[in-house]
Image 1 (tube, rainbow, N blue to C red):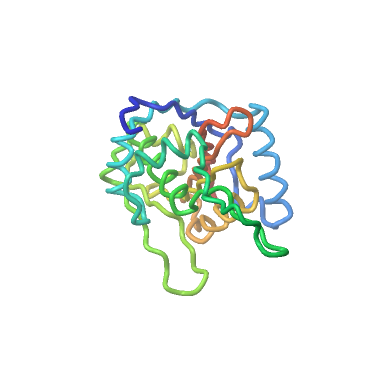
Image 2: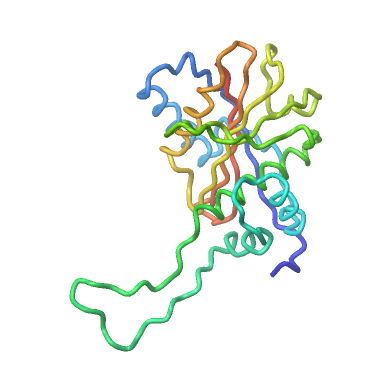
Length: 230
């Protein structure tokens, strides 16, 4: 499968900037997230930021250098997850005991889908002209439930302005990346914003949410970028 030359992944940017200070309550945050997901599905208030023609071998190189989880062969995993085909498991001829059922298909791994998303994010940054040597993966804090954003970006070139439009922005920018083998999960998008909220404290602080998902209509990989400020 790795002989495939490229796979197209459309990346959309939401036109509304998320101000965490203005969306101060969880109820308002849920409402904003619901609107963003609805707008994306109906192609309202979003712009096509970039169509990535993903070369699997290059995606694997980004995986090796930037992704958190020790998951190799993302090139092959990406192609299999993109087609969505799950191999069937062996089912014995004997029926299972009462109240039990056989598992018929493999589950997609959350670690793999997350690693695909992180690798696609770096792929996007490189395609936009952002200097990825100035991008690093943050380590989680040791305190329980102390989750931080995934990436820190020190580049301040014009290319960053394709993702961050705030006039008060000063590097670094923080990015939280989520991946899914189905549509965007509302609660995981909310969690991404709350993780950014831990580090966005000054008016010059800016963040990015990158959510890679499978379009429920055509089952192709797509991604949404949200710009986040304090």
